[in-house]
Amino acid sequence: MTSTNATGRDQSGVTPLEFRETLGRFASGVTIITATDGQTRRGMTASAFVSVSLTPPLILVSVDHRAHMYQLLSEESVTHFGVNVLSSTQKHLSDHFAGRPGPEDAVPWFAHEGLPLIGGSVAQLVCRKQQVIEAGDHTLYLGFVEYSRYTDDDPLVYFRGQYHELV
Image 1: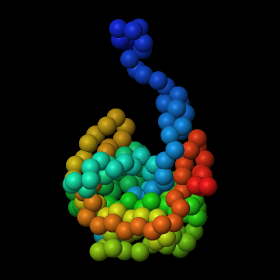
Image 2: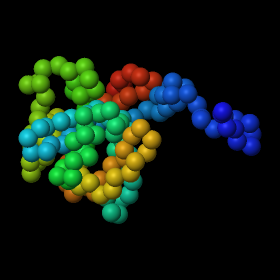
Image 3: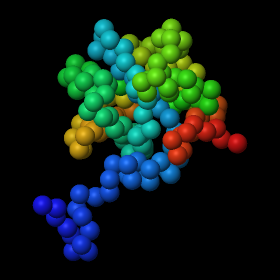
């Protein structure tokens, strides 16, 4: 049985395809979330990233439960994660960490106090897990920003399922 609200609309909401196509109209930067358990270094392409608060400095990332990053960030011993905002020249890295890997040795890894980050990014944030929020088929990780750095390079932009550059 399907329930409806007062307007007669199905409460199950829009279809996943309709939702994805609609949200694809929102231009966003492209990030790679990075973390390690001390042995395994992982990265995951994510466009579901948002700043939450300036004081205190908080950000939020959304991670699908099917992602390897979800398993890593779920570990209690993993207390920090990185957010790397990709530059317009780093489309290949977005593809690499979105499941279309190229050569691992082409990833410009570097470490900040043991946390893996991506070199050449427009910006990097080092975040301490502040709060973990279950949300449907994703988990939201609220991160307290302990360190940041940035450049004035142009970012990689994602819109309607394609990469773009600022012009």
